[in-house]
Length: 110
Image 1: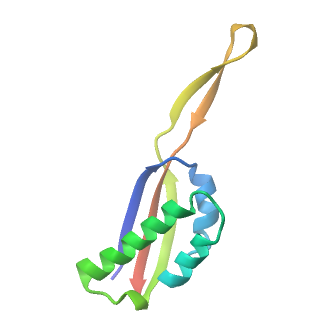
Image 2: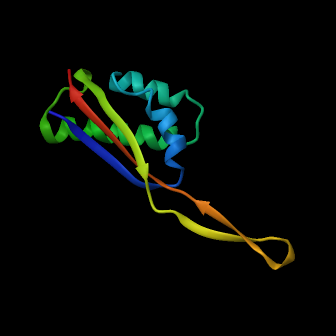
């Protein structure tokens, strides 16, 4: 049974999160959590929180064994973009796009 957890509107671009999420599929919960803890990337804490939430959903809602769970899929989609502007020379303006992401982790029993 596939169980998922999603974190929405995380303030990091989806492109940066995907670099980290591409390493997770096929790993166990503990291995993936260890990988995230020592990755050194700032968004790893948010991804680990989603991973732990997916494991807790599987354990509490469906009675699955935590030790037999594996990450099947992990992906990030684009969230809403905050549009801000910065003044430039000669009275002009340049846009600043503050991107966000929706992170989803899907786990399944082996």
